[in-house]
Length: 499
Image 1 (spheres, rainbow, N blue to C red):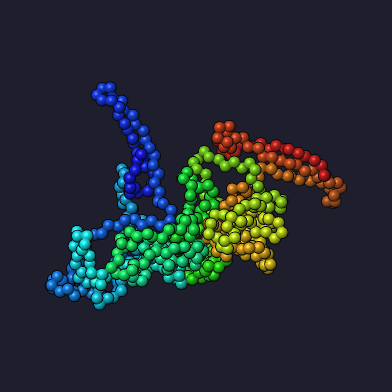
Image 2: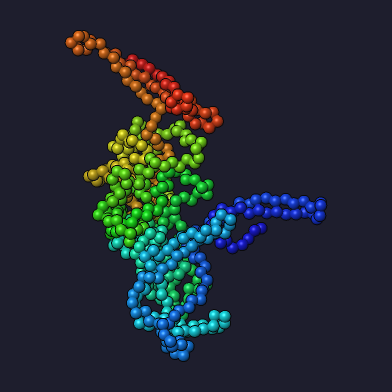
């Protein structure tokens, strides 16, 4: 058994060896054990041991001779800051990496009292500072002004040039859990609010160490409020649609349109600013935010650029994929019918948990089929993310995926996180294509007189299959490198007939 306290996350190799016998007859065997260490789900508070700091009082007076001595803070400032490094051990992990920093500084208000002289002996467990003289200063969240495109999102703190807001230790600090000022339901991605918040100090005499030594709130599942790129341990994405879980660091100032509603949005009036950011991931499988809804900036267009295939010799089996541009309505319905949307385990109302299926009018998934037909031709499978159809009872087409309005004639989600909104597209995408190797070709020949009048017409129809030559080992389509490098394919006529 191997046990111990981890100091870093990542993949590590551990060599284990054992020796039997002594001297020249000793036999030694060894093996390598691969360990993958990850953070546990929910909140995690790393230990930060105390540190002695020396302060110049700016006075010739010795504080020890005056029990009421203070160091005032005459002016507000944002000059304080922090940098958080992660420095994993190992031969290839010696360079420290900044994992977070307060780029805009930490806000400190003016205070005529400032710091108090409050001596105690830290080596004596029975010696404690006078709680009435404790002075705490802190910043519980990154910038969090929802009217300025700030949401207290820890993923954005690295980028923001706005200072972290100050807060009172006793009334506004929370330990062992999130603060109530961070409200994911009001974010553009519209996640769920936290079930439990952190514990507040009982007074200035209760230190964070004291608080964390007592029972702390049970963390929410790590998929409740914030999207994760992948839960796979293989190192690969199961689908390229998982790009919809990538945090978007776009820095804008704005007020969310319809926060907490059916379709929260970043308005087209949002302005670029280094002081704002956070609260949303790439909109793939849900309505695009208005500010990005134009050619070249739509997130779903990334699906045309990237692939989830790993390596250069891995191919995608296209057998059985449904061509969105040629499939019949019933075939299209079969793509979405019966798809259970269950990734949002906190979806509201609770009756939708493990019972949410694609929107319908009279038959399951008929709105999906209608949306595809209304949007054809689709130039690529990626365009599936943006298909539109008129919701039940509506008057204008709206995006299909991630849109509660499409459930107007049934129980619609009233609180839906980003992972849940984008789930339906993710489960359909890998089953669809916009290209085919089967074609129906109509050929018409006419006989004309010298005046251009049609004398006779003959029409034939051909069912054509473009058959590629594949490598028997890898399945890759072979090419013709000596000539043009184009794929080696044969045109096979499967059927022909006169009309």
